[in-house]
Length: 191
Image (tube, rainbow, N blue to C red; front, side, top):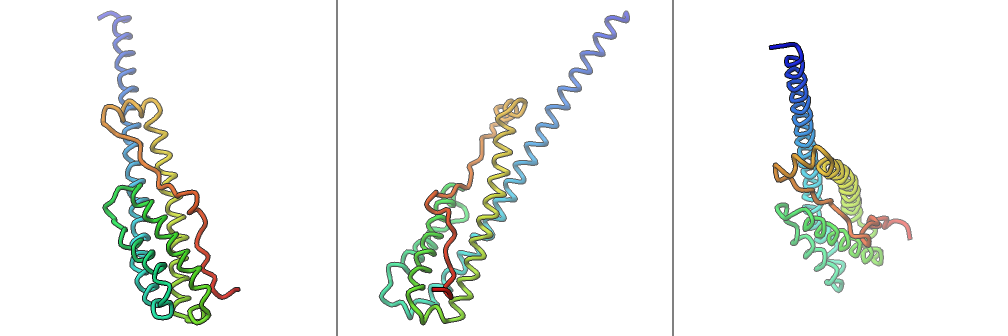
């Protein structure tokens, strides 16, 4: 083999190695992002479950004193019943928003009852649910950031090529309904 042919072969091998490196590095980066998304969702799911578990305690704490406000209690109970950790993320986001809305309605009604506002168990439950709502918002932000990164990577070259070959699709954001963006007001001590 002469020198020009050897140099051409070396150049081809080098280009193949660089291309293989780029493909492997892109594949690994995408897999890492998919894992981060799954982890971020698992963190959201834990907090959704905690909130789900606290709602019956809150309903029980206020039920006796709110006998004629059944529609609000029913709304919270129905929102809780709609929770399904196996549902697709957009469905869970909608259920989360409905639950937050129902909790806000309940807190607004509780505000009108001085007997309820003065009970420490009700205040403690409200504080806990408010803490969980804040955690959901924080974790939603982290999740959506990871989804944004992933969707961007699989939308650009070379990620788009890998995604099309491997069947990877963009992930859904855990989007809040714009009407549900505000956190519930749980400050029952101030009038």
